[in-house]
Amino acid sequence: MGKLKTLEENGTAPLQVRVFEEIERAILSGEFGSGESLAELKLSSELGVSRTPVREALRQLELEGLVKIIPNKGAVVVGVTEKDIEDIYVIRMRMEDLAVRWAAGSMTAEDAKALWDIVELQEFYAQKGDTERLCEMDGAFHEAIYCFSRSKPLNHMLTGFHHYIRHARSVSFKASGRAQASVGEHRAIAEALSHRDGEEAARLMVDHIEKAKENLLKAFKQQEGKDDIF
Amino acid sequence: MGKLKTLEENGTAPLQVRVFEEIERAILSGEFGSGESLAELKLSSELGVSRTPVREALRQLELEGLVKIIPNKGAVVVGVTEKDIEDIYVIRMRMEDLAVRWAAGSMTAEDAKALWDIVELQEFYAQKGDTERLCEMDGAFHEAIYCFSRSKPLNHMLTGFHHYIRHARSVSFKASGRAQASVGEHRAIAEALSHRDGEEAARLMVDHIEKAKENLLKAFKQQEGKDDIF
DNA sequence: TTTTGTATAATTGTATACAATCGTACAATG
DNA sequence: CATTGTACGATTGTATACAATTATACAAAA
Image (cartoon, rainbow over all chains, first blue to last red; front, side, top):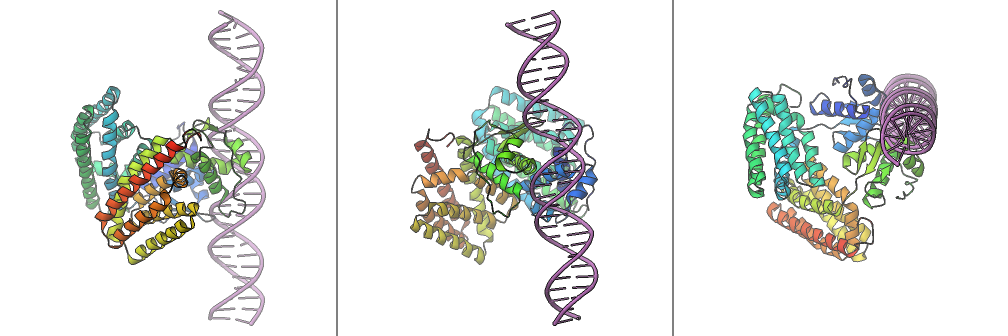
């Protein structure tokens, strides 16, 4: 039985979007356990909205694979297992390899500058020890590369996965000094991309994700039993 | 300005699902051009349903990347370009390589039998010259392997792409003898998988998708100018 | 003529009402 | 006691009503 936060009060985004994000967060963070059934009326009263935005959110979550909707019966949480996360890291190794190669082939000077801006912000937050922002910037770095690949399907897919493992990454970052180490690797990748060296960038990127994966699994083992899922 | 078919009359599936599939089909087949705006009321009256299922469908289509929703403004078609399709084939080469390797590592006797059943059905339809069914079976073959990979994220992603390029594949199949050639390649892959030879299966699969890609591009060039998009 | 302000129409966002379906409890029947 | 049928309650599916926002048209002023 999960507990939902109240929605961002001052948010200007449509209710449906905020409801979607809140339920997604609750599932990814393990507040809703796998198999738990999500009744529209219950959710809507807990969130203080009508059923309409809740329904729309649940339909979207089904497409993301986080819930399964059985017609005339309702929605049940599918959830994310540790194996799912591991699989995603293996998939990412192959796909981000492709992403940096494509990005290297079409990087502009502005792209490179935008990438360096992110890396510098990362270094800034690393010095301050602001893990939260550091995690955000780590995400921004990778998503920037997805974007620079100039491939809508690749960008769409990788962005989706990134969303999916956001919570896991956050856990991993907070549980170790990984966030700091990550910055240096990003710098090296940015360097290679600035020289449009796709081969080198790919090598560095695969290595980077491999290390991130190992760190993540280590973090899981450490806090095994503390939480329901992670 | 696209024209929508009437929804399956006797369909037992929820309206929202049928509306989703119909709009998706219309976009993928090029009946709705890129940039065209989709008003909820217009769609709902054309389909003979209320706005509710249309809204839910549009929200889902946004998550698939086929439309973009601007809050308080409406939905516009994003559509699929030829480059998108090309990119997806490159992505598939890498991901189905992974899928067959994973499948080879966990194939059961039942899995192998199910795969052979599909191949035999393909050969049957190939003899009959039933391109429509042949195309279906081609899809079923690949989706079976996604399933046998035992990876939810991989399966989810590849199934999504398969959906995305369904129309393009159909065009490609009908425009040449490719469908027939495909059967033999499937047989070889099934053979390798039955022996749980992931290395060989991967080699064959990459080659298979490469050929499918080349054939698809050739089909595009041939009918260039005939249609709006494809 | 250009610009700006306002009124109005059109469209989306949200809530609610009603219909259809499914599950369960309980009684009737064998 | 087991089984089946029915009625009721709960939940989802769909439609509609109302609120909020945005676009458009047109007039007035610079």
